[in-house]
Structure formats: structure tokens, C-alpha cells
Amino acid sequence: MLGNAGFRKYLANTSWLFVERTVRLAVVLVTGILVTRCLGPELFGQLNYASGFVGIFLALTTMGLDEIVVRDLVRRPARRDELLGTAAVIKLGGAFLLLLIVVLGTIVKDMEPLTATVVIVIGCAELLRPLGVIDWYFMANVRSKETVVVQMVQVFLSAAAKVIIVVFVHQGWLTARGSLIWFAWVYVLETASLAVGYAVAYMRDGALLRAWRYSGRMAGFLLKQSWPLAIYGVALYVQAKIDQVMIFDVLRSRIGERAANEEVGQYSNALKMIEAVAFLPVIVQKSLAPAVTRARQQSRALYETRLLNQYRLMFLLFLVMAVPLYFLAEPLMVLLFGEAFRPSGKLLALFAIRLLFTNMGVSKASFITNESLFKYSLLTALVGAGLNIALNFVLIPKYLAIGALWSMIISFFVSIFVMDLFFKTTRPNFKWMCQAMVSFWKIRNVS
Image (tube, rainbow, N blue to C red; front, top):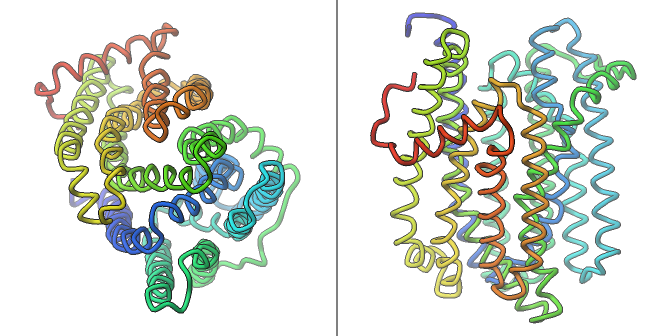
């Protein structure tokens, strides 16, 4: 198989993606430690509240178009300029809608002036996202090397900017509070560098940006196909980002803005650490997805066996990551971020539980895709987001950031496991997930 040209092409493409993710993880971890120590719990919480508030609406800048445009670029390469041009205009419209919503949000929520400014600056960064459609072009042609190079340049530019800001604060040339605006502008630098880099890569490939054209008919076609994915994306972003916003909003009047920001800072620091390892199950799932799809076409029994073994592998991966993390979380956070972030170590220990739902949810994507249960997937995302918000109102006032964490865990448990029991087509999947967790040592060849 290694001698097959097609296999080597896909292997090289995946390798570039893995290298980029690994380098990004290392650089972001180092700069994250510097930024977190520089700001402290309160200001770090304020920055993450702002980015989390914008993050709730980030799905508007993709509008669920990515997979659809990639698919159509493969199917109809001759319509590349129309597809990319139309998708770019739709993304730009979504970015303006996002900016309008976040500006109105700062007014309605009566945000403190500095927080409002940071929110608006981060929101403006999204206006540069439309050129991101170029990434989809290279993805459709299985040539991620070009965009990975651009993304790695962006990572190092962002890291350099953050280090410079930290040095300025350390030298007393800039106050920690004043640095929040500059850290917000780093978001703009990141999107600007990606936009320029993608444009250069596209033109070096012999293509012309000026050849792009917008088509109302194409826009209608894309939006008709993508709207369920857009809603699904919003629901997922809400479930992932709403906690950082609600911790502050719910606690602001109860314990004061400063203490509320500190709770957000402790929670966000633990969340970023757990997200650092979240790419591992994604890589495993994407690597095994073709084998599961082939099994679906060959034999139902083989398909079910591979799904079961994939769930076993994901549960085993959860144990390998979560058990050491649970016991080492607190001393690790103190070592990396200092004594001020000891509370985030206790949160990180509990966040280890979330890895179970992350791993099983990522693996469940193979079942959803092969059974074409996209409407069901949308329903579970909406239920999960709604339940998370409702539980936050109940648990945060009493348990602070820990309450938000338990709200997330419960909502993931319901959306990933319990919802399967309500539909005949998904009950077998519930059985496979449960069976995998009680027999993970029986894992066999999954490919």
C-alpha cells in the first residue's frame, strides 16, 4: 500500500496537518503560559470573556460552508472561481453580521468600556476571514502543505507579538490592564497574516483573485445546503464558549466584577489546557474514518465491529490521558502558571472527566456520517447548548466556576449518550458506546 501514489499523497497531506497542529500546540502552550502569568487571573478572565463572547457567534463567519464548498470544488473544479467568490461574499456578510451582533451586545449588556473595546476589536478581526476560502481550495486538491506553511507563519507571528507585549509589561512600558487592547489586536494580526498568506499561496499556484465572481444563484444553492450546518455550528460554539460568558454575567452582581473576572480566568486557563490535547481523538477518528466507511459498504457485521473497536480505542485514550491528569492537574498548573492559578488546577482535574465525552463524541461522528443522521446531530447540538445554558443559571450562583464545569459535563452526557435512547436508529450506537467502556481491553484491529 505504501507504494500506491494515491495513498502516499493522502499520507503526506495528513502528515503536514499533524506537524502544523503539533507545532501550534507547542508554541501556543509556551506563549499561553507567558500571557497568563503576565495578566493574572482577573485580566486573563476579562480577555477570555471578550474572546468567548465573540466566539459564540464565530459560526456566522463560516456559515457551514466549508465541507460543502470543498465537496463541490472536487466535483466541479471548473466552477472554482464562482464557488470561491460566492463563498467569500457569504463569509463577509456573516462577518458583518457577527460584528453587528457583538457591538449591539456590548450596548445591551452594558459592558465596561475596556471590555467592550476588546470585544469590538476581536470582532473586527473576523472581517478578514473571507480569504479563508482559499484554504478550502487547497484542501479539495489534497495539498495542505501550502496552507500549513501559511498557518505556521501565522503562529510564529502571533507568538512574537504576544512575547513583545509581555516584555513591554515586564519592563513597565505598558500596564497589564493596558495590554488587553494590544492582545486583542493580536487577533487582528492573526487573521490579517492568514489572509495575506492565503492570497500569496493562491496566486503562486497560478490562480487569480480578480477572477472570482459572485453568483446569486450559487449563493442560494450554497445557503440552502449549508443552513443546517450553520445552525449546528452556532449550537456547538455556544456549548463550547457560553460558560466563560455566563460565569461573569451570572456572578457579576453577586460577587463583583473583579472576582467574577477571576473566576472566568481560572476556568479559561483550565479549559485551554484541556483543549490542548483535544486534537488527539480528532486525528484518530479522521485516520480511522475511511476504514469504517469501507466496512459499512462491505458488511454490517464488520461495520459494527469497527465502530465498537473505535469506541474502545477512544475510551482507552481517555483513560491514558485523564487518569494522570486528574492526579497531576493541581501541581502542574501551579508549576506552569504560579500559585495564583492553583484553583484552575482543581478545575483541570474535573475537566479530565470531559475528555470522556470529547473522545466519544468525536468517535460518534463516524456513526453520524455513515448513517446520514445530520438532522439528529443538529438536534443533539441544540439540546446540549440549551441544557448547558439552563444548568449554568442554576449551578453557577452556588458553585461558581465549578458549577459551569458540571453544567458542561451534564449537557455533554445528555447530548452524546442519553439522546441516543430516544430514537430507534441511534439506540444501537448507545449500546456500542456502553459496551466499549466495559470491554475496552478487548480492542482489536480497527482498520
